[in-house]
Amino acid sequence: MAILGIGTDIVDVARIEKLLRDKRDDFLPRVFSAQEVSYCDGKAAAAVHFAARFAAKEAFMKAIGTGWAKGVGFSEIAVTNDPDGKPVLQVKGIAKDILDGFGPSFLWLSLSHTKEYAMAMVVIESK
Image (cartoon, rainbow, N blue to C red; front, side, top):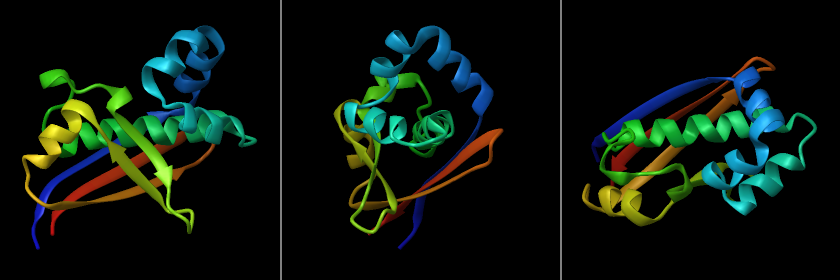
């Protein structure tokens, strides 16, 4: 097994709080899936959880080496949880096409946050 890509990102929670306050109706559907919105809105500190997922999407884009290039968008990347609560990435569209170009792979995702910052790390490993 080999590491095929790695990405990390950190987000200022206050930035996400401002977007949720001022542009929620535009921001949420453009960036998050309905499942992500439901999950985050169900938390006492929703902005922290939105920020962590935002960071995960950015980290994934870095791991596949595209950033915003090649048409990859936030709506193609979602953070869900496995039955044990572990966060996992779900990708579709152009993002999945690019990931599939790496060959058989496994995505590792780690999220962490404080009241002020949220971060994510994504590793793409060959199977």
